[in-house]
Structure formats: C-alpha cells, structure tokens
Image (cartoon, rainbow, N blue to C red; front, side, top):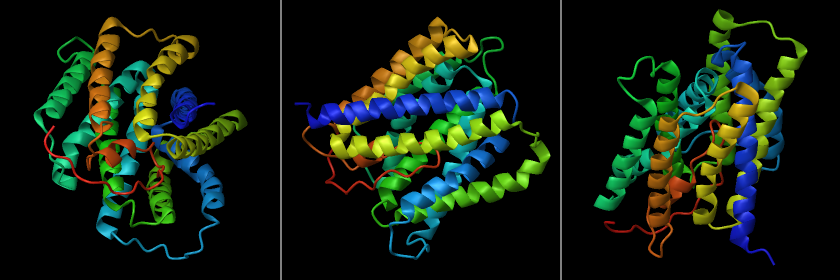
Length: 315
C-alpha cells in the first residue's frame, strides 16, 4: 500500500510538472506579447474557475480581517506574477528557476522581522550559501550576462517569499475568497489600465494559450492542495526542485536552450541550501518558519491555511 507521504510527493510532482508546462506556455506567449497582457488575460480567464471553487463558501463577507497585510500581500502577488511572467519570457527557463529557487531561503530571512522567528547560525549559513548560488547563476561582471530578465527573477523570489510569509501570518484569519479574489481583482484593474499601452491583437490560438495558462495555474493549485492533504509538508515541499529537470527538458525541446555549467552549478548550490532548510524544519522540533516555507504559493494562488505550531529555538 502506498504511504501518505509517497502519495503527497506524487501529487506534488504532478503539480510542479503542470506548473512547468504553464511556465513554458507563458514563455512561448512572451515572444509575442508583453507580460502585462499575458497577466491580464490569464487572470481574466481564471475568474470563472476561482468562482467555481469559492461557490461553496457560505459567508458572503469579502472585507479583509487584516486589511494592511492583505493589501501588502496583494501588491506582492502582483509583483510576483508580473516579474515571473517577464522572467520566463526573457531568460532561459533553467536560469529563471535557479534564481526563483532562492525563495525558501529568503522566506527564512523575512521570517525574522515579520514572524518573530529566531534563526540560528546553521540556517543563516544556508541562506548565505544559497545567495552565493544565485551569484554563480548571475555571474556579475561577466560580459552581457545580466539583464532585466534576471532582475525580474530576483524580484519574483523576493516578492514570492513575502507572499508566503504574509500567508503564514494571516492565513488562518482570512477567508479563501479574500486571499484569492483580491489579488485577482487588483491584477485585473492595474493590468487593465496598463494594457492599452502594450496591447497586441491576438489570434484565436494565442487566446487558447492564455486560457491554458489560467487552467494550468488552477490545476497545479488543486494538485498542490491534494499533495498537502495527503502527505507531510517535509515530503511535499522539496518536490519543487523537480522543476529544474522540466526546465532543462522543455528548454532543450521547445526553446533550444541548453543550460551552461554556471547555471547548473549555481542551481545545485541553491537547491542544496534550500533542502538543508527544509530538512532542518522537518525534524522533530517545530518552528514558526515551517508553515511559511511550506505555504509558498504560486503567483496569484492561495494555498490551504496551515495551522500554527510552536516556536523552536536557535538552530
């Protein structure tokens, strides 16, 4: 009989495969359209799917219980979506993923001022090593190595970490409708206002691609919810790193992108640092950072709230 953790890891692998295909579609559309246009139409087409998920909720109030943190989270979600879509369009998938994989490490750093977490020297060492891995991928000083796409990937990692930490802080107080709908409404309004400046007419097949982005995001989210319900977070969260395999495969097959040695070396350093943090959090003692690490959601999507657990000391 398959254990709960194996089932959870399997659902997570499926979710990150879907997310990787989602990102590949975004990258393909990014050849023709500005990230603002892709975000706008993908969010617009996602509304019916989200409404179907929320229709079972009986409480009709959409007023946030923590309006300031909800507003900051909404802005961070918007930044995450826009910067991620731009990064996928502008740089190789493997490089984008390598930089975004620093998100759990940034969560660890942000947990100190926002959650009051005490982070010991070993986890700070992992954070520093992870940032060294990012520098290896970026290769500052190398001719023509850095661009806006790399900066966008960094913004994605930082903003995504902020979303996850705020999710840990308010996730048990806010309703799913608030967590889901406010970022979508904000994206629709803001990107809709900017759309006339970048709009390009879209043929039917590209509209279908926009719909695939919306469906892929929702399907991936549902698989992630199933994963966290089936298995322990420590078995589910590290499956995110399977996206590097997808990045290499999809990059080679679809975009003629072959990751260089520096990208792969930096990715290994970042992944090793992130796994160290995950393993530290997965040990017998618990930490208030742990829910934030495992609540790291995809741009614009809200995971199931994680119940609070006890604080751990220095580690």
